[in-house]
Image (tube, rainbow, N blue to C red; front, side, top):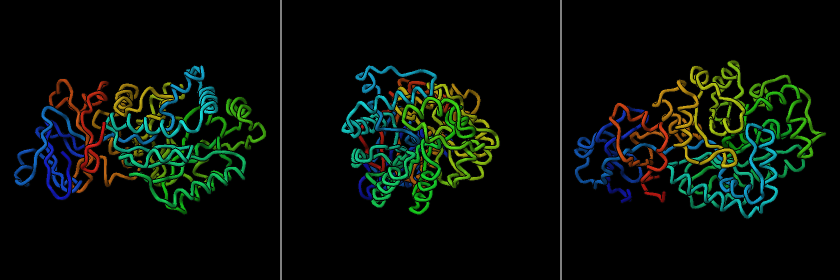
Length: 426
C-alpha cells in the first residue's frame, strides 16, 4: 500500500528508529500526502488519526533509508569489465590501482556506463539506500538516473591539465547544470582531486560552483602519495602516475602545503563542500575543516582495500566535523550496500563511535553532507516519508537494537523501501 493523495496511512513495526530520537517499541508513522505527520507509539498515532489505514509490518524494524554520500555508480560493473580484460586488481597499492582502473576503462565502450549505473541504482535500492552522492565522469550516461527514485546529488566530474580540454569539459558541465536536476537528484560539480587538475582548472571549477550555487565534492587527502605530491611534487604520483598518463611535463611546483591547506588556499574549503575520504589529515587540518563547515564522507572499505590508512574519526568527531559514509566504487569495494559499509566501519574504527552514532552517520550524516537533511535522514514530523523496513529472522531486545543494526548481515534483511511515501522496487 502507498500513501497517495491526502489519505492518511499508519505504518507500524515492532521497532521504530527515528535516528534523531530514541528507538520506539511498537512504533508507528503517520504519513499524509507523502510526508510524515506524526511519529510515536502505535496506540498514540492511531488515536490521532482514527480514519487512517494501517500497514502493519509485524516483527520488523522501521528506520530512515541509508545515504551513500560518495559512490561511483558508473563503475558498478567494473569487476566484470576487469575480468573480461584479464586485469587483476592490485592490493595495497594506490597508484597501481589507479592505473588498473584507467587500463580497464580504456578497453570498454562508453555504451557500458548507463547500464552499469542502472545496475548500481538497483543494487542500492535493494540494500535500503534512499539517496546517493554519485560521481559521474561520462555525462551522457546520466540518463540512467532519469527514472530513478533515488534522492541526492549527481556530481559531474572533471579533471585534466590541458586548459583547452578542461575548459570544454567545464562548459559542458555548466550547460547540463542549467537543467537543475535529473530524476530526484540535483546536479553538482566534482573536481576529481588536487593531483589530477591544474591549479587554474581547480579554481575555475570552484568558481563555477559558487556562481551557479551548486554543490561541490572532491576526493581529498585520500593517500600518503597525494600528501607527498601536493607538498613536494615528488613521490609515486610524479614518478609513476604522471608518466603513465602522459603528464611527465605537467608536474606542478611544490606547494609545501597539506591537501587541506592547498584546497583552502584555492577557495575550495567552505560550508557545503563534501570532502571524500579525508584519511591523511592532521589535527590542524581537521580544525580547518571544522571551521569551514565542510563535511567528510568516509569510505573505510575502499581505504582498507587500497592500503591508504584509517581516517582519524575520533578527531573529526571531537572537532565537530559532520561525517557521512560512502561505498566508493565497485572498483575498490565488494558491494554498494551501506549496511555492509556500516558494519565494517563499526569494527575497523573500533571504539571511535558508538552504534547510535554510526547509525546517525549512515543516515542523517549522509543527508546533511548532501544538503537534503530537511527531507531525509531522520523520521520526524514534516520530513518526507522516506523509510526502510528490515525483517530479521529474530529481533533483539530494544536495548540491543542499535548494536544489532551495526552488525554484519543487515543487507539481506531489507524487505521494503519507501521514498516519498511510495514503495519502490528493492
